[in-house]
Image (cartoon, rainbow, N blue to C red; front, side):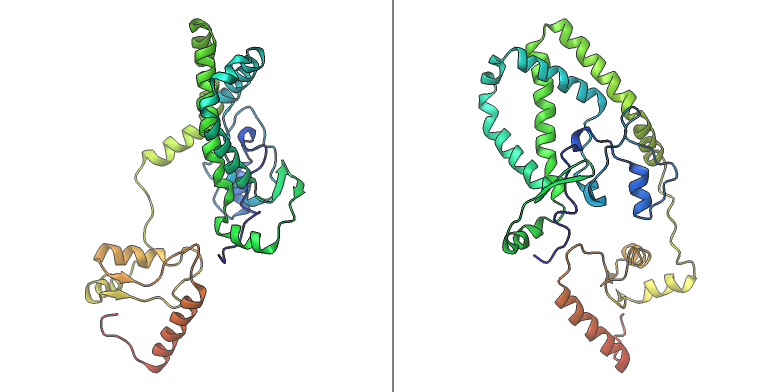
Length: 271
């Protein structure tokens, strides 16, 4: 329950209509923006209240938003359709509850914090396990998308429904085309990562030793990846990895034992 980030990695009330400033997000986290495209070609970013709200990112796409507007008009002009959907209301209630959980105790609209619910510390501590609560937006996302398509198909004459769906698909692909192009470019080619461990001694060591030990056992960032890659290729064990929620007390105890063994020269012959 010691995870941090609840209320920071949340969802925004505008998440379904907000394509986000994707390059700005990458720059904030020190990521390379070369070749990266924005999600929407027509809609601008609405802004987030925290940089961590990328965890609640769930942009519908312009075509889906257009169909959603059509579905709303249909439901307003044909109220009987609501009664036909009563079988799905329990699922809708669950999905709305999950969406509320995604918002966290800080309710945000764009870059504004509308309200902060003053929950007791005990409740906040319990909710901390969900850390990136923004990810709970997805059940409602998919339910709404299904409901929009079902409403258009079942409530419109076939020709009108066909036209609306075609226009929606064309708008959707036009809106997201640059992002699709980025994905095609990125995944069309084989990975280009090369290990920085060029010295032949690394390969010789990997053949000789069955265990790799890194001090400290949870290095910063991606520093462990080259050694993990080497260990994986040779079927060796390794004691370093990235963990989102490490047991800090156990990790410190292990690091202290590791340091003491190194200082005393008690080194295992297979490590």
